[in-house]
Amino acid sequence: MLEDDDTGALDVLEELVADADGCDLAASLKPIASALSEYDFDSALKPGKLDADEWQIMKQHATHGGEINGDQDSELLRLAKTIALTHHEKWDCSGYPNGLKGESIRLEGRIIAIADVFDALTTARPYKKAWPVDKAVNLITEGAGAHLDPDLVPIFLNALPDILEIRDQYAEEKGVLLNRE
Image (cartoon, rainbow, N blue to C red):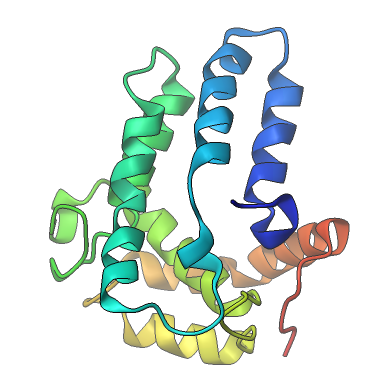
């Protein structure tokens, strides 16, 4: 099972629930946090490359994220559902779970796709070391028009100094391992 110190994701969700305590959002987030705690992340966090079966299971996380969010009254949770379902779609339609292409991928998903790639590359995981920022930026730039929205990548690059400042602040607070090169 996923532990807080593996990725920090549950830690952040718990903080959101705590911050939202006493409002309708808290009631909506608690079942989501509960469902996430039951999800088996062992394949995602194992050292080394996933085998074909593990990769198929891993690809289901986008659909599972949409299902966990369900149909909500909360605008924030509807947004979370959209992001869960679209953040692994690719500009050239080679992504998953639905093989969407270009602007048929919701803008929220296209934005988070860039953030997700950057985070995945520049943060240490059980299966890899954190990449230097310049190497991650090169891959993101090369992925514009194939993996990523070619109009959003330059916007991301312009915002990179601010993104790095926020990332470094969060990493220090949570003890996340980054490559700061």
